Image (cartoon, rainbow, N blue to C red; front, side):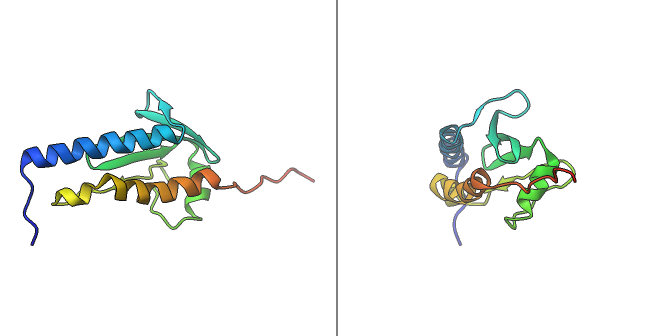
Length: 124
């Protein structure tokens, strides 16, 4: 059974996690925002993003488009608020591995950035 990290070890892992994930989302086009820490343009509209010590909070500004996208990716989503969060916490420092978190979150973010929304009917 893995030993629990000391408070200092955990704080250092959380700092690395937050720095690496913040750098990653900026590299994907995120820009400062007032609602969450960052906002990024996606085919599903504006996606708000905040990186915390051991999780990433995201929220679709357009809940309807967020619902359309998440229906295609089999990833939990709140259809009422537009929240689409990613949690990485655990009892070991290894659970906060930035490379693993980037690979996991990046998989879904890349799918979102490449996604094509359903066309709206243009009328008769």
